[in-house]
Image (tube, rainbow, N blue to C red; front, side):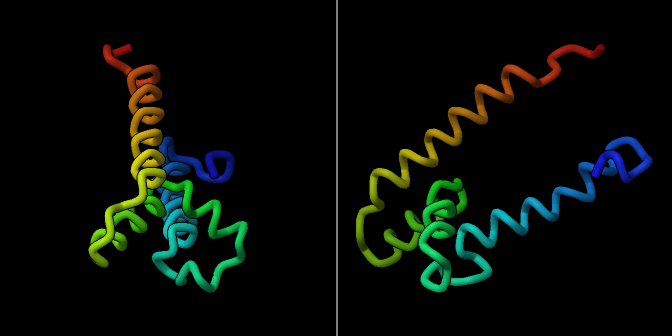
Length: 93
């Protein structure tokens, strides 16, 4: 996208909705996970939104959320937190 768009930052603005759509589809927001193939369902379970969706659904049904879903969300938070701390610009260049 950045090679096609001219203004600085336009590539991020235009590609962000594409990534959001992919994450929402894999998590089972747009299509029920029961209608997905087994491999797509497994990939969706390892996304933060997919894990959160399963944990919330379990809670709604009166079941304790499965620890693997909570662990996946914690792992995503840890990895993203470390990456943000590493690559965030703390001082003006």
